[in-house]
Length: 93
Image 1 (cartoon, rainbow, N blue to C red):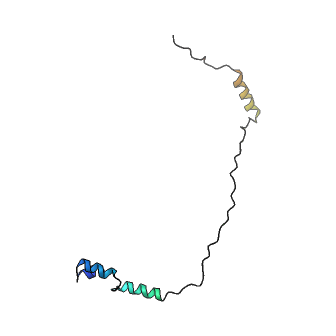
Image 2 (image 1 turned 180 degrees about the horizontal axis):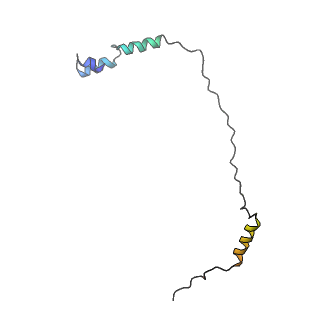
Image 3 (image 1 turned 30 degrees about the horizontal axis):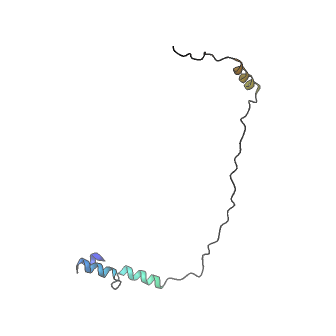
């Protein structure tokens, strides 16, 4: 509407006519007509409170599993009886 009104008047006058409400365009007239004929709904939306159960988080500590197979226990026992393969490093003097 500003563009249409600015062809006949100054920009300030075009802005005033566009937004004063006294010079509605065809689209504004159709919107106003639609609002007048709009059917009001008798149904009302009621917001209901939703209740959620709050559960405290449970922490479960589990002990490490021991080897269950005889081969695993035998391998673990063999590793414990041998000395380290490399002697510890010595200090340089």
